[in-house]
Amino acid sequence: MSLNVSNLTVHHGAICAVNQVSLAVPTGTLATIIGSNGAGKTTLLRALSGLNKPTSGVVNWMGQAITGEKPENLVRMGISHVSEGKSVIPELTVKENLELGAIWRKNSREMKESMDQVVQIFPRLGERISQRSDTLSGGERQMLAIGRAIMSKPKLLLLDEPSLGLAPLVVEQIFQTIQDLTIQMGLTVVLVEQNAMGALKIADLGIVLNLGKVVAVDHAQALIQDPAVRAAYLGY
Amino acid sequence: MQPLNTFLIGLTAGAIYALMAIAFVLVWRSTRVVNFAQAGMALLSTYFGYEAVSRLGSFWIALPVAMIGGALFAALVEFILMRLLVKHASSGPIAGVAPIIATLGLLGVIKSVVTMIWGGQDLVIVAPISNNGFKINETTTLVFSPLKLFILGVVLILLIVLTILFQKTNLGLALRASAHAPEIARLSGIRVDGVRTLGWALAGAAGAVAGLFQTVNGNGNFSPDSAEFSLLLVSGFIAAVIGGLDSLFGAVLGGLFLGVAISFVLMYVSSGLFFIAPFVILLLVLFIRPQGIIGVKAGRRA
Image 1 (tube, one colour):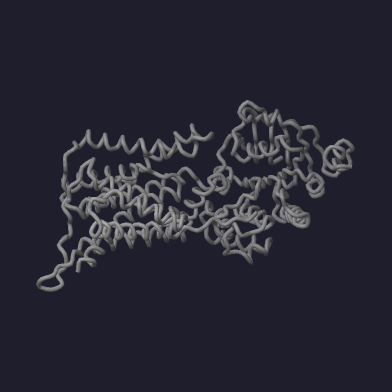
Image 2 (cartoon, each protein chain N blue to C red):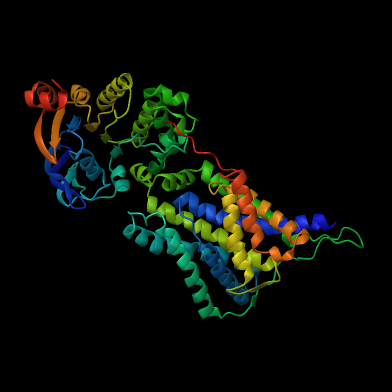
């Protein structure tokens, strides 16, 4: 069990956004957290990557308690978070955005290897490698954000709504890439999504969050068949 | 002859404003804050330099001493003021403005502390290189001197070194990322707090050089309230804005342009326009090219 969350509670000021959430994600699993707007999915992810400080509860990664650790330290422990909204730095070039993910490793040979790897996975980034990132399309920016996360050589990849605002064809590509990466790089992935169907189709494990609480945990395929989940999130 | 002299005087003064502007741009590029206490730090660093010259007798030792002192002091200010203050004022309408106002307050505090420690009277730092103009022939002397040439050379070298740092090194990338998007930088593993402090330290060192040069390029006198330091603050800031605030090269261009422009205004229009000239020039530039000489219009994709 590489990622273990116990009774995690996170507040936004007075509002309880994440309420006593517990979950366990085995190594190498693609877990997806689905739920409607305001369910607390993003807050949960931010608590896992250190951007938000939990009010109470414990987060364990690879046997170590990481609750409340700073994000820059968690990166060094193998956790990479792609925050929502295509988190690239528009003023920097594609190359610079990618390099950013690997600077902390202080190894230029490894940085070059990782860069070649990312360009292989996302050839479009290679085509635009010297361009400023604000000239990229939405899909390309999302690829860049994921590419930057990969540059850190993560073991745990946290993705916040990568499909947001993207065209359906691009969404398919991104989801497929996420699934391929999980297998090829042996990653553990927590994928937060509003696109419940797309996410459940590629995931192994599904977690449904509503108003800050876990309301269902099951194999993703089982959740797709579950009538309650279908009615609430899958539209049929 | 006079136009040439006017130009050269302006060029050297402008090079010093450029140093100050570089300090502003360094802080802006690494932390997105305008540091109005920059001149106060330059003032304090000049006093450090003065102490070094008095005790050790050499300007050449005093220069690095002032730079290190300036860097350390700036790092301290960033650590205490910015980290602690910003933590408490990190949301709400005051969040963007609080750090800037804090630096304004700090400027006043530094001046008072300096006066308390060293007194308000004029102190002197003697230039290490001759400020006597080059002789062209028997009767004419250029206002340009070895000292002025040295100042221009230092500014040019500093510009090149800093530009290489920011554009070509990993540290520079970390500095830029930490300024544009600290959260993304953190998620990329950059120790943003330390990087921002480093940005301030670099600015402190640049400001120290500006303060020392401003002193020795004049008559060597300086004091907490001297007009030279106020002019340095104002002109340095305006030069940075003219240059686009985001660009070191723009800061140097802005500084040189401002220095030469002011010099001509003072010589050919009226020497009483001492303080107004920089502002008028600023307004003109902002009317014509609001993003500054080098500034890039931000790209937007829907």
